[in-house]
Image (tube, rainbow, N blue to C red; front, side):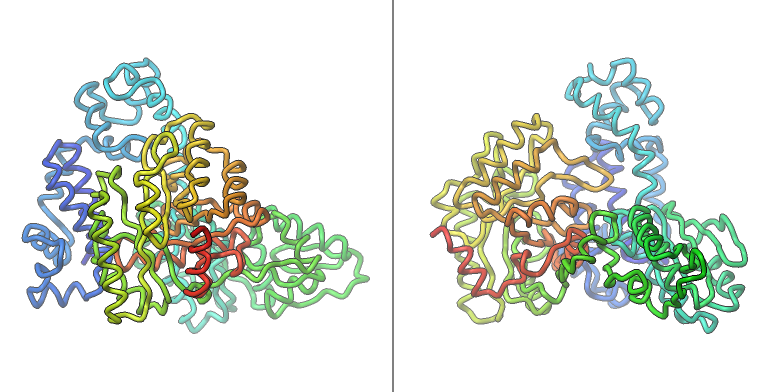
Length: 576
């Protein structure tokens, strides 16, 4: 049987296929919306099907209920299979190219008879794509660059997708009687935004049964290697997983080594040499037998042997963490328990899947003190953005909800207001002044020149009504490159105007990139870790933001939403 996420994936693909065929936009949106509903469904799917209550779930019509039920019970859907067979398979590969959505791919297919990446590359080389209406030279150049990058993209997987595969494997390894210790290592443990492959490390004296279990794990599509102490498998997504088994005495040295990064390990080996030791995954060894070789019973002892405090895995990128450790300047990194609320979230008023009350209830269950509602503004028509009248009505609804005492949480009125081409905002200052919090974001004109895009955002930052900038660079990891931007100038402007920069915690965004946060916080810029939730379940995206914030060396003090409600309200009212 297919699980909810797999069924949602099928519904998403149906929406894409329907758009490629030129189907009715309302029908397309119904499938895409159905996928979002299914992803965030709190109730048990089997129970809803068995009791006939699946059709009572908002957003699921009769046709969707029938198809979800069929997929859950049989794992197949004739409608989907027939639809997919009617579309050249190369078109779905073309959609993965940044800047090529279903409409553009359909135009390439129908106008230029292009059905594969190789045909697309040839058409670009011949200049035929640039001549097509709605494309042009810039689009053609982006497509060429996207084709070149796709091979690299296909080798990386979102952290959350990799973690979803890794967690049950790690749990299962720890249950095996032969296993003394088990951990995941590599870029997953370092919380990189994408993961190339999975690395598992096990301490066991008898590795045979462990290897047998690992190579027969459900979901494994291919066993690429199976040895006495190392095995490799590949999953349907293309993600590879490696398992190494070592003796208990070597486990923590191996864990450190295979966690990486390469640059961090090189720096650690240099430090070992300065102590008269050589360092490898097997442990520490004296260069001339004059130094006692320590045995590590924890990873902390690995660092202690080299005169260092333990360095959190997220910081191990060879970017000054060892120097900071030596100077006792390692930060106390922000933790999920520090978060007291969030600011950037959507409701059914724009493109969200849940009502204002549902979002407030879900936030309160998470123990938060406040929840910011920031539905889209009118220029985001594709997201059913609010005009002035509808925003005024929502402000009133939020005030009434707060006065009702139904929830202890304070709902903050806000807007994710569009930054227009010249840097002006979608609403005038008088209306924005009525809001508790204003998030300003770019949603259009991603191809502006670097200086123009930078000036556009800086003008928004300089507007005294703007509290924070949302998803700064507009990137979608593995799908859409950040737009051209002078981030140094943006950070300077944010510091000068006391404007917060968001760390958008959607696992597909994680924007602003973790590599910029040390620069920003050194300038005094505050971070807000926001889920950009479009449904109650997406409030949990905050955890992804915290992981990446830790990677950016963020402390609790540098994250705005670790403050209490009273502190937040005082800060937000600073300009009034």
